[in-house]
Length: 126
Length: 126
DNA sequence: ACCCAAATTGACAACGGTTCTCACTTTATT
DNA sequence: AATAAAGTGAGAACCGTTGTCAATTTGGGT
Ligand SMILES: [Mn+2]
Ligand SMILES: [Mn+2]
Ligand SMILES: [Zn+2]
Ligand SMILES: [Zn+2]
Image: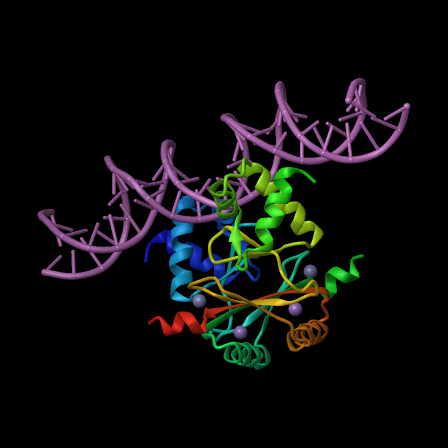
């Protein structure tokens, strides 16, 4: 565990919304940390493989990362305006996915499910 | 409607699986069509905006396109080995998405749902 | 068929996020 | 302190995609 990694880990711990590698890098620089962009990318992808952070790809092509509270499998409801994120755990979708796969003779099926909309507070501001 | 566009349209019509812009370009070149890669990109993105083709982004960062049979909203069950694609229309997920959004005070919620696994024929080959 | 404005095309440069390279520094172990 | 292994930084390279702009093609009016 290096200085750079623990700085990133600490930052993720106090960042509630999904952020891109570049955003996280800027945030670290902004608070005086000396760290390179390449290191941020490497650390994030290592954490993602370990399941320590969740990865999300928006409509654009850039990945965004988040330290999620619950360790178990879940999905995200993300505000497309402010980024506010709600973790959603429910078995309805998992059952649907399993049933659909079985009906079509598929196996080893994984699913990608994300919801994006406008959160209550963003709706108030209009 | 130009020569290039109709060639691409015809190709998509007889291509059952999701293909990338570059793959489609190579296929057209392979059958003797003179068409540039930029034109393929432009045509595909126009068709996507018109809803004439569906767009899917896999684990990598490249987009894949497919002329889907049903025009209404649906999801895809894709074989990660051979690309074989099944269109899935069911209301379970839509209801779950709407309910979840409402429970958390979100509005204007859209959902991205994709299933990927191994199809029956790919399973046989093992 | 001809004219012409508008749309489309092709070759190539540019872009943006990400990954690679490799010399150097830091870490962990003895 | 000595040493091997792991991590880092700067910048180049990568790759799918989008932009540029001159040249070509298209379609509607005549
Ligand atoms: Mn799930
Ligand atoms: Mn749906
Ligand atoms: Zn919001
Ligand atoms: Zn298959």
